[in-house]
Every structure is written in structure tokens, then in C-alpha cells.
Amino acid sequence: MRFQSFFLFILSIGFFTSCDNLVQEVDSDLVPQIGEKVVVHCYISPQDSLLIALVSLSRPVLGADPPYSYGTKPVVPGALVTLTDGERSVVLSFDEQAQRYSALAKSFPIQTGKNYRLQVNLNNQQVTSSCTVPAQVPLSAVRVDSVEQLVGPNSKRWQYQIRMDWQDPAGTRNFYRTAGTYAYKILESITPSRLEETLLNGPIQFNRSEAFITDLKQDGQLLTSPKGDFAIQTAGGRFPIRPLQIMASLLHTDANYYNYHLAIERREDTSGNPFAEPVLIPSNIDGGLGCFGAYNRSQKTVLIP
Image (cartoon, rainbow, N blue to C red; front, top):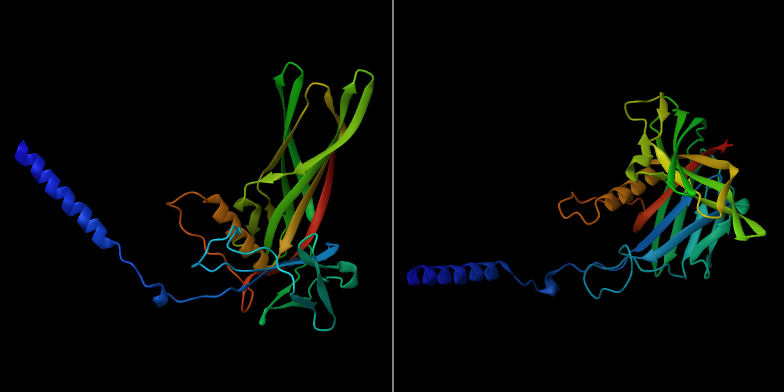
């Protein structure tokens, strides 16, 4: 028994020694130093009232680890942000309160089918990108199903599910994103003799990456969105007032918008899973990082009495 214990002791020393030999220190001077890069996010649409761009700086891998999120520093002032269509141009001004660069869309209307170029100059760096605004694809139908549940003595819950249908234009590769909101009023008892109306609203929930759809292998067909859902509920002294308004939205996007946002959602889907395959985040910003993309939104409103 004593020999066996001694043998295990010697074996454990060899194990920890071998593990220690696997750790190798690398001289930081031999590691390539990559400086800060300009990071730009800008998405344009004919339906938007504001042109907005977020400009920040990337966070180097090595060095101090300040409390920045998503590998970038906060939006930085001092950049020259220019948007042009080859004939006209507009400069987006820095809004310190909103922490963004913006301009009124009515001063530079975004048009379907046009190609736009974005240029950002910051800290002696210049980055550029371009995108083309896709056509609007109308929704042909919005289908709503609901289930009513009793969740308490004086409380009910209505679970809603929606799906959207649209006709895909044939002959071109198309990219889509589905979204939506709901809104309704409640009548709330403030006192036994006083009632108040309050407007409540929220987003329709789609599974992250499933909200992104292409017409790959279904070009020119009638497409259907994944299921979106939301719920409303009564409680003591609170009652919903009909109609319930559902606003379904279909974004016909360019490839830049689609590929970037789909990658972000897939990364979030696998967040915290050490065995998940890494998701590469694409960029179409020449000389920098980020995304400049376009979309054209169509909407359809459904009222539930």
C-alpha cells in the first residue's frame, strides 16, 4: 500500500510538471499591434424620417480592458459623416444628447433603386461604403390566431400568434426581415369612482435568427414568415379596451443589412455555449468595421375587435 501511494505521488508530480510545460509565455513585442479602427453603423430606408449613423472606435485586443461593450468604444464626436447619391450629398451632424450623427430625411430623401455612398473621416482615418436601396415588397396577408386562458380568479390572458404572407419578386436574390408591434388601451380603476385609459404597446416576438428569410430555392414563390407571438392580460381593476391593433412589418433588405444582422442574432443565439461554432461578423466598411445597409419597409395593420 505504501508503494502504491508513493507511485501515485510521483505520477501526480509528473502530471502537473507536464501541464506546466504546456504553458508558454509569448513576448508581447512579438504580437502584431493592431490599432483602433473606425466602426460605423448606418441603415437607410425611404420610410425613415431621420438619417442616423453611429461612429465609434474599435477596442484593441491587447491592452487595458475598459468598460466598452461589443468590442467598441462609445460613439465619438468630431467625425465628418457624409452621405451621397452621386448627385446630392448631406452631412450628418453630431447630436450630443442622442449620441449619434443625424440629419432630417426630408433634406435628403432616400429613393428606391438608388446607390448611396457613405464616407466617414475621423482621426486622420477615412472609411467608405456603399449600398443600394431595394424595392418595396408589399404584404399580401397577415394571419392572426389567438388562445384565451383563465390565469386567475379575476384575470385572463390572450396569447396571439401571427404569420405574414408576401409574393417574392422572381429573378433576383431577395432578403427579408420580419417584425411587428401591437397596441391596445386598458381601462384602469384608479379609485372606486375614477377610471383611466392607458395605451400599452410592445414588440411582436420572433425567434432571433428565424426572422431572417431569403428566397433561396423558393424564388418567385409565395413566402410565409415564421411565427411571431405576444400576449395581453387582464388583472385586478385593469381591462383591455378593443380594438387591439397589430402592425406587421416586412423589411426587404440588401445583402449587407441581412448578412450583418443575421450574424449578430446567431451569435446571440449561441452566447454562453462554449461548444458552439464561432460566428464571424461580416463588415462592408472599407478601411474600417461595421455595416452600411439599406431596406424598404412595407406594413399592414390588423384590428382585432
